[in-house]
Image (cartoon, rainbow, N blue to C red; front, side, top):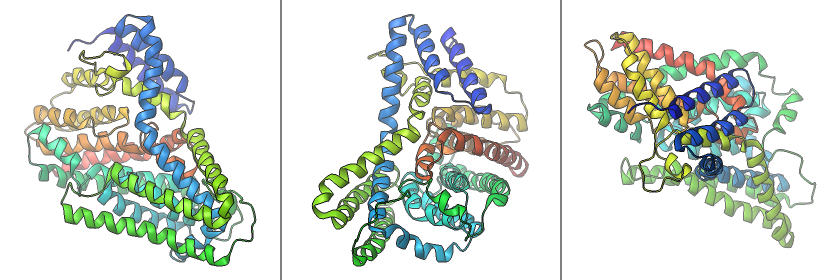
Length: 471
């Protein structure tokens, strides 16, 4: 379609947002103003501009609330375990494996990757945030370093290949008109190359910041994590402490076993993954919270559980609240959400971001390397909406159209999948599921996205070069 003034205004605001992030400044203000201006110009009504600002934030809040909720319940559970003193006993066995921060780096990487590969990162993050991250920080791992490892291993390396569930390669292959297996195999190779490069760079960035296991600063860093602050001292029974230190990890293990069982029993699409897996973990966490609170205070539990849930919500919104208006602006560029934001009813909603990408495809020169790089850039741009999957039909169809004699459509589709999911899946844009990782680590989602940016981009560029070379 022909680009309008609203398209160019959306592109300008997007550029401003990216530059603002590069200069380490907050991007809430430009996204709020950008939402207002784009909606006003597109509809030609200042009233629509006002309503769109509210609707964009409401839409983003609805889409992200499941992440906020799982953070709330897991933080509340950690607070209740802190009351009992069970939290430290719970991670003691893990610390026997994580002997120091360097070992912790690779344990976090491996466990996050494996769980995320089978069930997607959404249910993996709460498990790792509750059990492994505190143990890693206690032996000297920097909190930001732990957050980077979990994000890149799960939402980057595992999700970008999606080799087990294969939703991503199926979307890419269908749009490109090729076999799913061809895209899946190449995507797995490229995801591992990108992940090894990016995580290798992260290790080099943080290795001098890894402290000795007995460093007093480890305890201070631990307090940065949700649910790890000082709790009131009580005469809680030692038996309850030991009971919940065993019950909580066993409950999470039982959830994992059940998810594995349903995955193999129900086939590729029959398991509990993504949002369903997170809902299961969240429900188990709520009941564990209730039982732990009863064990701590009996009658006082009626009030205590409310305090824990409130503190969980306060933490989630205090840490992640700025992400909502940012996500609202990028949702305005997606055809899936723009209709409700602009109050368009049954009319065809605009897809501003995708229209811009489609219009730019003609600018890609006839060259194998430049075509591959162009598809990668298009994938990265489509990932800016914070989804990662929504851009795959576009990158897949472009791969089929732009394939040259030197590059197969499956190779280009896999490259586009890397760009889209590594960006929107939750590594370098703060308004994606990266908010969950940031929340469980108690760090800023925007700062985490900035830290991940250079390693991820270098990994994507080098993996694209290797793809052109070997295929």
